[in-house]
Structures are given as C-alpha cells and as structure tokens.
Image (cartoon, rainbow, N blue to C red):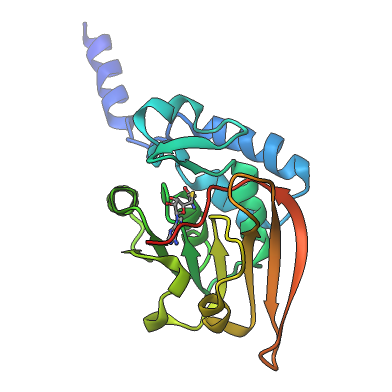
Length: 231
Ligand code: SAH
C-alpha cells in the first residue's frame, strides 16, 4: 500500500505538462520533406515556417483531414487554398527576412499570410470576398498572429497607407500586373504574381523593381490560380 502511494507521489511529482505538439506535426514534417524540400525549396526560413504553421486550423472543417495533402483545397465561395509547394515556392522567391514588410493580395484562408508572418515583421493582406476575409482574420487571431493586418477590399489598388512594401505576393491570377502594385513596391523589391486569363494555365511571374524605379519580369512556372476579380 505504502509502496503504491510512493509511486503515485513520484508520478505526480514528476508530471510536468510539456507543451504538447499538435497531432499534425508529423504530417507537416512529412509535407515539408516529401513535397517541398524534395522539389528543391532550400530557404531555411521558408521550410521552418511551413513546418510550423497549422494549415489544418485554417481550412474548413471538412478539409482538415486533407490539410497536408499535395494539392489545393476548396475553402468556400469558389476559392482555394494553394498547394503547399506553391506557397513555399512563392515565399522563397521573395527572399523573406526579418525586418521586411510584405503585402499579400488574396487572403483566402490566411495560410500564405501566416507562413510569411512567421518570417517577416509585418504582413498586410487584402481579400475581396468579405466572409473569407472575416473568417481568416478570426482564425489568424486564434493562432496568435499579431503581425498580420487584414483588410476587405479590392487588392488591385494595393494598400497605399502602408506602402512601400519590400515584397508583394499576389495569390489570384490577373490578366496584367496592376500598376498600383508596382508603384507600392520598394525599389529593389520583388513581387510574385500569376499572370494570365482566368481558368487557363497562367504564368507565375517574378517582378523586380530596380533602383532606378524601372522594373523587369521573369516567367517562372505554369500555374493555375483562381481569377483576380474586381468589384
Ligand atoms: N493566399 C490564399 C489563397 C487564396 S485564393 C491562401 O493562402 O489561402 C485567392 C484569393 O484571392 C481568393 O480568396 C479570392 O477571393 C481573392 N481575390 C481575388 N481577386 C481579388 C482582389 N481583386 N483583391 C483581393 N482579393 C482577391
């Protein structure tokens, strides 16, 4: 009897509630190794962010089990959250670093914003479909991100009050590069944007604004994004 009390005492005494890793940590690590690192993403900050952000907490309930699969997922209102690899690719492309201020067009689920917010200082993100923007804002708050600023509106005009940005990530396909976004990019800054007609294969493009204010573009990858819409 005495012995079992002693064992109980020992157990209670040494029970330290370790912060539990969420049960999807393993799925995330596998996602990073198999889908992202395996396809050539090398940027450490990007890989770490992708290992950390709880994608399953940003997708609709009926998609939670698919959250770490190698594909885009529906998020309602005819929109999608990008495939994890594409999020990583776009993140790596802007060369994310602490100290940066980044604008995202197309908040959607909030996932791309969260990945950026793990690395850079401030993220500004705009969504045109109100219920999506409201939902992403609330989910991002629950996940504890205090450096993501959300807004409902047409991202075509950027977010002038906080410009210029070190980088801009556009996650909806536009037929051309919105001029206000180029204007709001810092000299030396980078923008990544899918360009092309809706519901066709578009080109993911890198836009670099040079020190003299001129800019150049580079085609990177054929992609399929949901269309950039206007009110
Ligand atoms: N970055 C998102 C991907 C969302 S899909 C994520 O990580 O989940 C692209 C999003 O762009 C959609 O939610 C769509 O509603 C939004 N969008 C389309 N046109 C827009 C515009 N003009 N301004 C802001 N958001 C827009």
